[in-house]
Image (cartoon, rainbow, N blue to C red; front, side, top):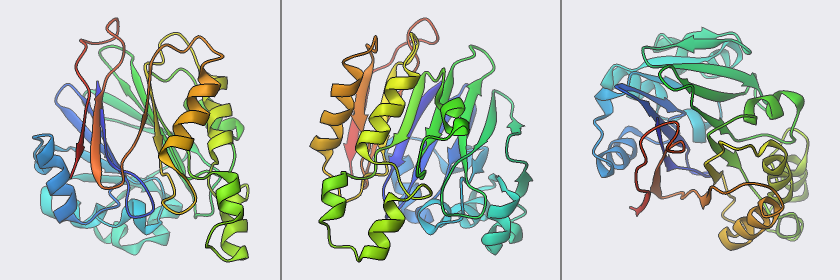
Amino acid sequence: MKLWVLGSGSEGNAVLIESGETRVLVDAGFGTRTLSRRLAAIKIAPASIEACIVTHEHGDHVRGAAAGARKWGWSLYASAGTVDAWPELEAASCSRVVVGHGVTLARMTLSTFATPHDAASPIGVRATAHSTGACAVVCTDLGHASASVRALCSHADILVLESNHDETMLASGPYPPSVRARIASRVGHLSNRASAALAREVVHRDLAHVVLAHLSERCNDRGIAMQVMTASLRRTRFTGTTTVALQHGVVGPFQPRAGRAAPDSQFALAL
């Protein structure tokens, strides 16, 4: 199994997961030109992607999904609420997934978990490789660590986890009070502190990578987010890597530990 974050933040989100010859996108929040360029940077043809599963209907997660499916032949999946909230998905023959259930593909299974966010029926996604049992989790856009979120993030080999804002920077930031309240709410976005607490709770022997995602460009700082997370994980048995995803570039590949799959080097590309 391999995972790349093609970009993450308020301007767009997409995560590519590969197991054998099966490739899946979790979200396609960029236009097809940007997706094509990011995939070319890691030498992957967009048409080689089998499926795209959309976590919710906000534009930074769904913007390129229907167009990508039409252009490159992807199968599309999303919850019923997401399909209803973004009509382009239904027009592109998107399959409706019951939240709590999953999708079985040739080399991996995609499991869905409810997440607390201000969208119609948002989900987090766990991809499990059939050959090794290794799993990658994508968990962003959530206001708090609900029981469903904790179940989603537990036992992950690769964890892509939201670390959206620094609470002090949000409180003094440029957004109007209503927006600040929405971000900080229980259906908004996860702070650095809350993200670090969740990661600390789900650490286990096989957790190889924690990737901090969906950082706010106005109310967060890469160094602060990394410092909060590493300080929290330092008190655990975590011995893996911690990485901050980029908004305008690719990070990866991330792979399970050698006992799960053959090791590979990591790199970051700023496009």
